[in-house]
Length: 95
Image 1 (cartoon, rainbow, N blue to C red):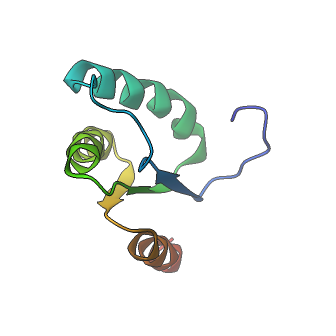
Image 2: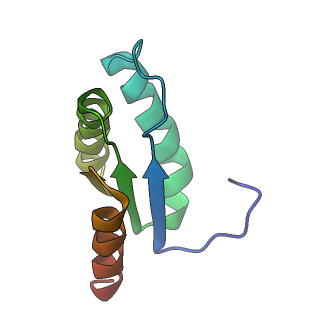
Image 3: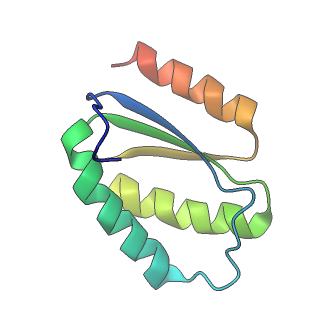
């Protein structure tokens, strides 16, 4: 992502519905969140809507959401794309 010309106030839509997360644990979610922090700090504010349809995906994404919010990122997990897109559109109104 660093090679693209991105600007602050970035909206990100992440769909993890097809991800194989069976071996994921807190340490791997924490590692992912810390590495994304380093990149996204350059583009604050960032609004990240995550689509997670299964209970496992939703639970892991909620762990990420809590870690990211602790570091000042605006992250929200959704069960479907339409709710995620609606939330992202609302974020644009507040920036």
